[in-house]
Amino acid sequence: MADALHFAFNPGRLGHREGAPGLVLQELTQFTLASVIACKDQAAQAAAAAQRAFGTSPPMAPATAAGNALTFIWSGPGHWLALGPHATGAVEARLGTAFGTHASVFDQSGSRVLLELRGPRARDVLAKGMSIDLHPRAFRTGDVAVTTASHLAVHLWQVADEPVYRLLVVRTWFDSLWRWLAASAAEYGCEVLAPAPYASHTA
Amino acid sequence: MRIPCPHCGPRTHEEFTYYGDATVRRPSSSSPDAVAAFYDYVYTRDNPFGLHRELWFHQGGCHEWLVVERDTRNHAIKGAVPARDVFKAGESK
Image (cartoon, rainbow over all chains, first blue to last red; front, side, top):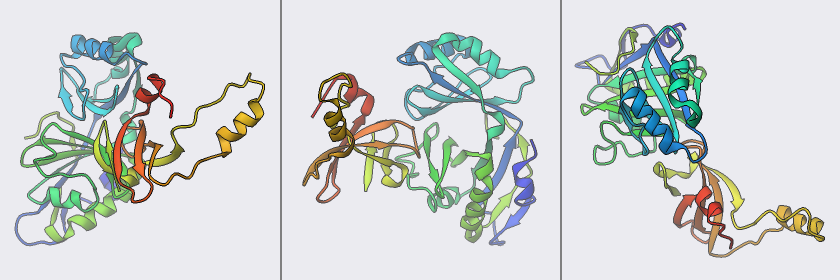
């Protein structure tokens, strides 16, 4: 899949040019993404199956849970996204084997653009188009929100206290999201980094 | 107007779609007065002045159906519960 930022902007500085950038934006590529939806009244069994196969229990509340090879991102009751580095050989098959009859698994790898947002004004940039409370008293590292940004449905989660956020948006909506993001970040200065392969932890 | 989603937390109503009265129940199609009962079920609605239980779908969030208790006079929201719990419990009006 071509890098989503390729048609948006090349790496470089956008907006306000003095001082350190308020937002540092990077697309993360080469990831595998799958939806995992527990069958009716099977969420507990699905969680137990994940614990056995991946060493972590998918969260029952809006949070992330990192396991071996992949991270579960809460997406709704009994509904998660499994995110991991790109792996040849079907992760879908591995997930399907792990969950058996307790959950339905579908590959979503090409469907989303994954962004990482950091910098001293990252929270302010997001707040311009999101209605949820991003203040640390309400949204912390490990928390997930399935919500809207500039009227587009996104998954947002925080991976570090600085704060560092990651955001998943439907690939075909990325252009719209990008226009809002670039305009919102302009007053603080925005550094766009070259896309990097997905890694679960942040440097 | 802010809706306290039991799954996601408080969210703006723009994330939700309104699906109307949560108190009506689908009648039996085998009852002798099925036609009249279905007419009521589909078309006849009260226009309550005060608290009302209604269905909202959280399409901008967890994709769950909720039963929201809203005061039609001032949009004050008293609470929201997962619709599946309401219907499992066999609750009616």
